[in-house]
Image 1 (cartoon, rainbow, N blue to C red):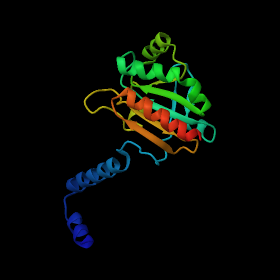
Image 2 (cartoon, rainbow, N blue to C red):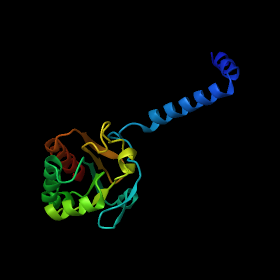
Image 3 (cartoon, rainbow, N blue to C red):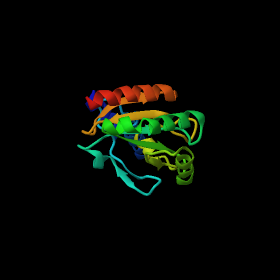
Length: 185
């Protein structure tokens, strides 16, 4: 069969070979990188600047602290505000459990600064207006330039311990609280 396919490929015009090669590369890329990471996967490595100017690298937390990396659609909307304020209020427990919270949306730094000030948030936010981090974790909305509400609890070893992927802020908060408590044991 391979020989037959090779024969067919060699007898195709150059333009057709180029198109088929491009399709194969795209198919391989999508099948390899086009999925939201799952529990048990190694978290994608990232480096990004938080709104306060701090450079955050996942590698800096390795062996020291778990990371709750949560993506959300938009600053100062009801569900996103509820989620952020509840995380703010639970920060003492999360710190005791060895968890660093980092929020990410496609909003701008200016929007994040207002969101942080309006709600006295006590954890860093990353502005991702170009969607690079959103794409890295494959959490973008298909029809809008926003992130879906997806949370990743990443262990000290860099492996994803738990993923919550639902629009409900309440489900995110409950699941992440439970997962962080298990991680701390």
